[in-house]
Image (cartoon, rainbow, N blue to C red):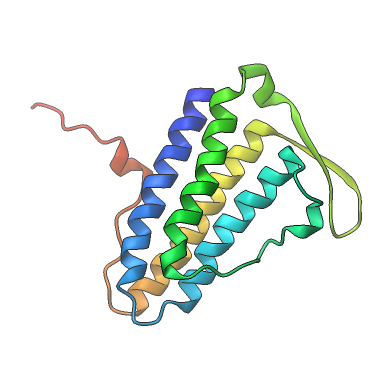
Length: 157
């Protein structure tokens, strides 16, 4: 599972960096910047729930909207934190629960590090699709970032 998660985060990283190149070309970037920034703030919020560096309520789901110039740096910092966590985790640690208090009602919640890692990647795919729709609506062909394109192998006849 550990190697799968590392590969998935790396795929997600390459796909999002590819997406940033398309966002740069957009005449109207605002909504794409918000969605991409949300990916960063979400990863940072969940990272903080593990590291407990600051109170959880200091991290918003929709926090800072980064500028185009900031996005790649902030994305790299965010994804690299997760790569380090997964790289350093043992297989049993991937099954351990990350515990936190839900902000809406203060209820104690938990999710395994493995499932949290999967959620972060699926969440990124979801918003990448939304951004690709925004790119298409502005007359630009969105980048091919489907997972399958990283796994296809040409086979001899």
